[in-house]
Length: 473
Ligand code: ATP
Ligand code: MG
Image (cartoon, rainbow, N blue to C red; front, top):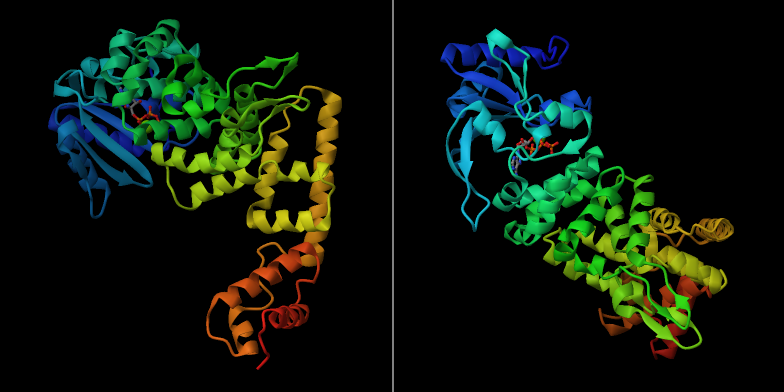
């Protein structure tokens, strides 16, 4: 089959590479993800891989010199690859190679090989497709493993024996699941069995690499596709056991609770329809993790998960640490949403008092909308009258909060009176009293005793100062 590249936006680049390779006496092909996505008509690529029977580094340099005013080519000698950026694309060149693996490492021993050797070492048949850029057969699809057929049938199959393929480089297990999730492909039966068999090998892969794939799963249209496969193969239990601990339904005295694992997957899929924010999706994934360690059957009240949001938000930190995820603002954001995840709904049961609404506004601050997106996604009941009731309750809370916000402006709360002002009022130096008074002002505003207003706050501080024995200066 010939792929018509005449309309391709990179045609000029491909022609140039073709000519340079021809002059050097080496063959060259486009290979891997770019070919796959081109045939799938998928969105704009970020990288293009070229493979040459010959020296990849010198080809990269020669091409870069022709198209970049001051070319910066990065060389990875160990892998025989060279890369440079061109018009926002990563162009990567590799000399065709043969690989063999040692038991303890996912870094192979490498020797020069043919195009077919190079296609064999690739993870899936749909990633092993190559398009010739050579003048005698420009545009021809080179497909020794029937990758095109697998692409049409949406199947992920390894070119070589699957157990060996996954054992050699266990990251491929995560890649299989990632592609299954992002492309909505099936992992071929023997491959799936091989992943289950080799699953323990995932331990030799660095957590950072596992998380790169995991986050791509989290960003796919339906992350549950990948999460289910991770669960089914046993990878999830090895990487995030806190999630698999949510699995299962227990019964005492005829009373059951929902399976919080499957519930979580539904919440993640729901939220993914409403946000591309990776960390909000993570908050959905982790919103119930405190439920496994807090689960209790209490005579009279049934199943309880008392304080699961607090424990859950504490667990987030350890989890992020272990998973080598960023520990800064993103982690704190996830913690905050997990901690607040039940608050809006709890307001219904406690009556929506203004002070409770103000406190939620104050605690959620600029993340209130995201908290609402999470709460909406959290409604997974199949009982339609319950669903209607929950949605109504929730809309009521959202409306009440809006009213309070317009009235009191406590979101992104800025104290109406500053520490410096309080010190000036009483002629004080910085000290414990200032903190106490500031906290009292905040509490009084949230409780509705005084408005969020400078004069009211001043009068309040004078009164409170007196009880602390402070005298106005
Ligand atoms: P995307 O770029 O969309 O994430 P991709 O398939 O292009 O997907 P890359 O990581 O860019 O993935 O890798 C480029 C190509 O290199 C792949 O298509 C595949 O042929 C090969 N490849 C990448 N990682 C592996 C691996 N761990 N084992 C075998 N082949 C791999
Ligand atoms: Mg790629």
